Image 1: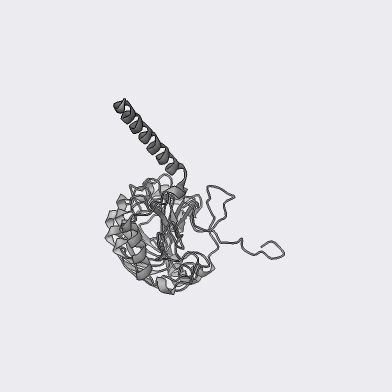
Image 2: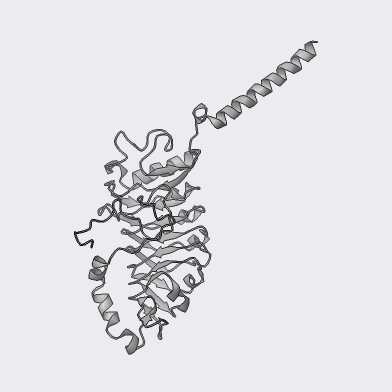
Length: 328
């Protein structure tokens, strides 16, 4: 009899344990999720390395950094997965945030192993100076879909190991000081949009991009590119490669030069166009109209952030542009 009672008690204990586990899975409040210490430390390093103590958002009561768990406490610009166990997006300098990024990208950024969207740019704050190089650990971000490093003073080479980031859909690194050869992009089979323009010391050829069947936006003007311009790039939805030194003759798309490209060894192809593009590049960029947006959901007009489709070319504005009485 005692043996029977003992076995019955064991079964009841197991049943109770199972119920508690199930309740814990269905009721997040019963269990406390937390990001790994290495991910939290990487965020702390970003804050300390990029002038976080002078940010306008993320240092007050709401979304305050360095307090508790980044997911549970909602650090500003940090988005986590559904279980609040990993950081999947980092975007501290959002439109209107006033969070100017000053400093360097810390090597520990590579510890954000589940990161999908990384936006470290002063494009929307119009101040700050993000400098230094892209750390080699950046290549550890195997889940990365979109990276936005534009409008900064990042220098050095783009680490060749980034060619291993095969899930990339968008790469935006315009207006920096990168130099050296382009990385091998042939394995970026999901790449939709890339903008590297105005990195004048970034060299190489575009043969790797010609193999990317999903590419819809390629902006590589005013760089140090050379070699033959692949004719397949004429089919890219938006392609701008002027201000480089491609071989002539250039491929044409109907009556127009493919990708508005310029070349170096033909007076017919480059007469006036190369000098004009170099002399007026800054004014051209300043007056350049907004590029067409390619949104997976035409009704999604949110700023670049949680849930936004990262293969869209550029972040849409927070509000629609103002129009005059004529609708212009």
